[in-house]
Length: 179
Image (cartoon, rainbow, N blue to C red):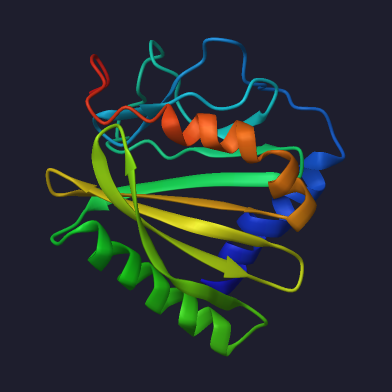
């Protein structure tokens, strides 16, 4: 588990920052998150995994995951059934993070905060590592938990704050024609 987190949060963005993307985000691209949500990622970022609205969803894929990299930042999503609210989801994710922290130089920053996107209340928990920082965003909608992990270097996150803010604001929890 620790290795997977470190791989996606820090190793993949570093490697991808040094090579060109074979699946870049184009203007107007919207990616599917779970069964009813979508988001518009920054133009030019690389799509490591994800399904665009209008593309066929592959057989056996019930909750598409998104993995994006660009400018030294990575964004990954995961979804699944969840009973509870966004606070409970982020608490569960934070408990996993604390287990990671016990075996690495990973620390939770501050207390979870409530955020609102697309009229939905969620929770965000920031973290820091030796190589960078990031945040875990959690939302629960109709029994489905949606988490987004944003990670990168301090400089990259600062430089891309506007892009990341636009991407988060673009999340549509009631997207038409997704499922």
